[in-house]
Image (tube, rainbow, N blue to C red; front, top):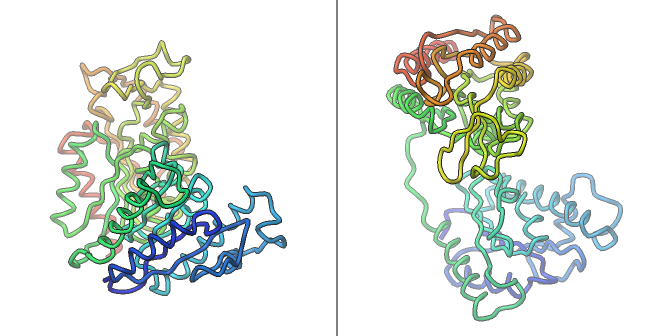
Length: 408
């Protein structure tokens, strides 16, 4: 039994009502409180759920004049999704949501997933979907939303669907009924890492743990940077050590690990202390070698593994990366220290390594120094070490102590 709240079982009752009720009945048979939610956009007020689609619709902050059935289906789905997100957010604030389980096809998944993504990390969220075997990134985003492929279409209870839906119900019951023991809360610090900056991050992580902090390491694969900044926006971090900003290079050069055009904006808007470096800014990430865009075929490439090909950034590209960072941080609200490792920014950027290019690195450093001169809140330091040298990590920890000591 969950300590508080109920599992919200969400679906379009005009097309998935039987499946929704089947899952709800299984949860109730296990002693789990359930609230069923209808998000139908064609047939409303079916009267078979605890929360009707009309009630969900009414939570839209700027309610359209038309009813869902009067709108184009795509517009109706988008509007109903906003209403559901607002409803679930409100119910969670009141302590009523122990978990959320959605059932849907492509339209239902697109409708329900945004509401799930608004819930905090750790709160159980499971989407049974016909599209869960494809690209799930647009639905999951940077959250812990789980997706279960329905195998067959969600069109009645049959030999396959009864098993898949039962597994979903039992999984949700297990998650909400068996929490983990509480632990002492330590202030969390977000850190970005790539394989080529791991030695640095591991040493910094150990130093933070010895200081009583809880280091949260984010793999800088696009969603990693997004997830870190999301937690920052939600007030779940005490500081940022953004050592591996390689996602910027992927954004500018169309790599596969971009965190999008808004990377660093949450950091700039926060008043929390931040240490930033340029880890792995020597590379742009692509998939397998044969997927590298044609315009880059003659560039300096390194096959990291069968699925990942790296491209060395040029002098001009490093200038562009620095300009992007500067444009985001020039009016930052909090104290920021930018630490530049003069002897290399990744494991591949060192003498004898495939991406060693001091000229490209120097352009990166000089542009940052020019566009982000020191202020009362901002410092920029060149350090005579490689990013993975122990001395660089130790300097990161020294600066962290200085920034957090001011806060304390």
